Image 1 (tube, rainbow over the protein chains, first blue to last red):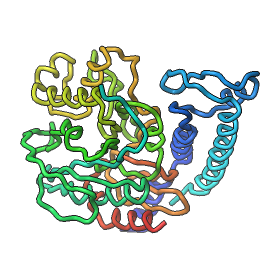
Image 2: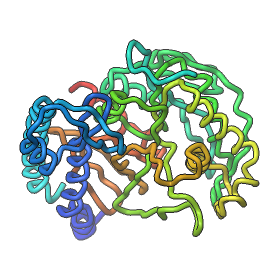
Image 3: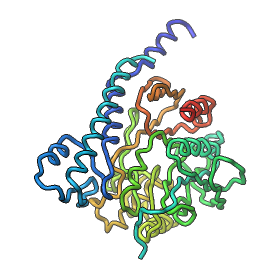
Image 4: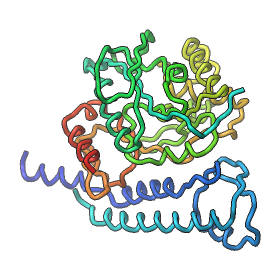
Length: 104
Length: 273
C-alpha cells in the first residue's frame, strides 16, 4: 500500500464526531430509565421539577408503559436526582472523551 | 391462571445456535454463541443455556439443550440454508422462569436489559433498531405492521407468553398464509416478522398496546474490521468508517468478524475489566 493509499484509508476511517455524539446521546437516554415500584420511569428535568413541586407525598404517576404506579414522592425524587446527576456526569465525561477521538 | 411474580425466580440467558453455510462460508454459530455466553456471564452475571442441534461439550454454558431443527429456509440473494427456525420452542425449552432470549450476535456489554426484569410483564420485545449505515423501513411492507425485533426478547413463563410462542410456532408452520395476510413481500421465514405478527394478534390487533423495550438497539450492518475497548469506550472500525461509542449492547451482523481472532481479543479485554 502506497503512502497516499494509507493516508486515504486513514482519512476514510476518521471518526465522525457528530455520529459518535448522536450514539452517545442515545445511550444516555437509555441509561436515564430507572425501575421504581414495579414501573419504569425515564428521569427528566420535567419529572424532577414535578416531583419537587408536588405538595403531597403519596401519588400515582404514569410510567413509560402508560401504567399508573404508586410512588412516594420524596423517595422517587431522591432516586431521580441521584440517578440524573450520575448519568449526566457520565455523559459529560464520555462526551469529552469522544471529542478527543476525532481520529483513530 | 399463572401470573407474573418477580420474587425468587430463576433467571438466565437463552441462545440458539444452528451452524449453517451461506455463500459457501460455514458459519459456526455455536462458537459465536460461546463468545456471547462469555460476555453475558461476565456483564450480566447470568447463567447461559444453549439450544442447538450440534453434539458439543462446552464449559461456557449452564445447560446445552439438543433439538432437531428441521426448518429448511433460504435467505433471499444468498445461496445456502438459513437455519433460523424453531425459536418458538424457547418457551418450552428454557430452563428459567425469567428468560432473556437473544441472538448470539447481540453482544451484551451493559446491564440495561436487567432493569426491565424489575417490573411485572409477560414479555418484552425489542422495538427500535438503528444503524449509522443502513435504514430499515418502519413497517413490514407498505401496509404491514410496525417492525419488532426478535433479536432480544425477555419473557416470563406465563399463560400470555405461552400463547405468544405458540402463535409464533403456528406462524412458522403456515408462513405463506401469514405472508399474504400481512402483505409481506420478503419470502424467507423471519423470526422478526413472526414475533411481530404474534404480538399484534395477542394484543387484540391494537398497535398502541406496546410490549416493547423502550430504548433502541444499535446495529452494525457493515463488514467490521476491528472492535477495541479502552477507557469505557468502544471503537468499531468498518471498511470506510469508524465509531467511538460508549460501552453498550451492540448488534453485530458481520458473522465472519464474530469468528475472528480480533473479536476474541476484544472479548478478552472486556472480560478482564
